[in-house]
Image (cartoon, rainbow, N blue to C red; front, side, top):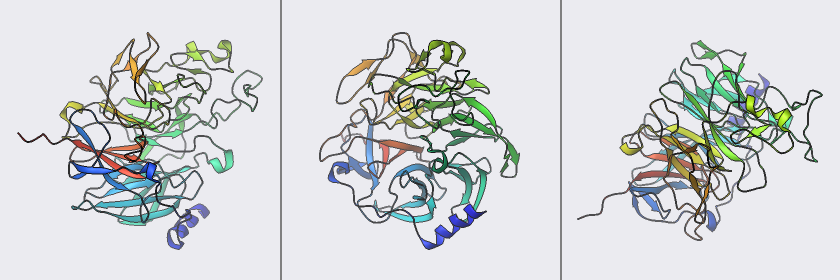
Length: 433
């Protein structure tokens, strides 16, 4: 109750976030020409696609670190603003794009703690994930907030390395909620495993997993949870296919080597254990953990690898009208700052939503070239929609795609949190004949 009062008070008295200066020139998207009704950036795209700039912060109103995107029935958008990596600096904004390319911002909530996912629930209400709770909110009455899940781990108490909450609704309405691991690899300062007398990681058995909260009906969920899938370092990117299958894109551990470990796509199942902090890739023991303690052969293997340090932050299945060739594909944002990241990709899938894979495949790197996946490992059959999103001085920054959303017209909207920008992939207009 005290927490709820504090949040409502913050709505009234003002933001806790520090003022934000304008973006430096190295982060600005220069524009020229048209991209489906928006100013076109110079990012080199796959043939037939262009990247338009909807908005970029250079001072004035708007989110500091835009993350989640949700289109409203009237054409406005809700945007979650991480605000920073400290509690109380986040916000929820309403973005109203104008017909002339202008954007109007209305801050609906402030004083939030690291808000990330925003989605429509099975009851039609809007749901937002903060660091330690998930709440329902009516955009027309943002002062009316209902917490539906609370008590999620709070990094102000636990120094959690992965504080962001994320969620998807299961077919029966249950909430599947990411609870990130409290550290990178469960090691001490000297790099030795922090283990129990039985040789297992000492860290909380309630983190590094996806929890399941059963749906009770009437916009209510059980306060009790069960561990749906465990051994997952960070599950901010999750999606449920129409078949009911649930997939997760795993941000693997932070080894200093640029060529490993590989990130992953996992199909989540009840009681599956995917190996954090002991195993990575297709079942290799991580440094610091012996093969005997890791027991990688007993863990659930990923359905596909992803490039090392890609850092997937959003995934969804494309179902829009603008790009028929993408229909049914798994869209994913690769947010990481290393050479394979800074991309939006479209992965081929089968009828059940599973990624199609190849062996002996390669992945692209910046500034140019490619590197191999492990020879016999499954690699996604992916089309990179943004092949030229590396830094071009004075033209555009390296892409940092976080949130993804498909608009009703089928365009793909992107939140770039490092550059403070909202971008839009649209169809390139055919040249006049």
